[in-house]
Image (cartoon, rainbow over the protein chains, first blue to last red):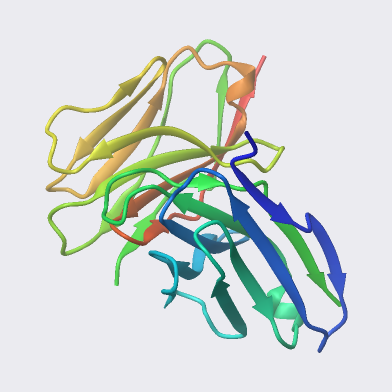
Length: 114
Length: 111
């Protein structure tokens, strides 16, 4: 029972390169989220998806795009990476559409942009 | 905008003692959930405890309990009988569809 799986776990990019972080869940949850974690700033929401086919911006969406491919998968794309996007990225899921229920997190992906 | 403030960047406690981590938040909503998450050095985010805003009773999970003061918008975490395995970063979070996280408190348990 994998839960929430993120790939890759580590990635080094050069400024201007593009890449996609993949997230897949086998928990049959409706909502999926992408957060970034930076020292002294906690976790900040980039995008979330309340259900298949819908996405919405979070607190820090600039420079990112997302795709909710199906109920299981939610990808995060950096079209032209910048050093400010160096961070640890977490995918998370949540069972309920509403306010109930905790987030279940993947193990995180450490991205370094040189 | 909804905000969460954890005013203690770092704390330390002796093994077997009790420690309280502070959290305050700001919202105009009346119904929401509050959470404490733990992040050990492995980086995995682990749910410690959650509180429903409409419930008066403070949540408890074994050695972990909260002091929820809705009017003061305060949600502190008390860890009793601290253990070395409690060493971690602790995040307070609250919200509805979108969870907002605080900056975190690093807790070190010393033997």
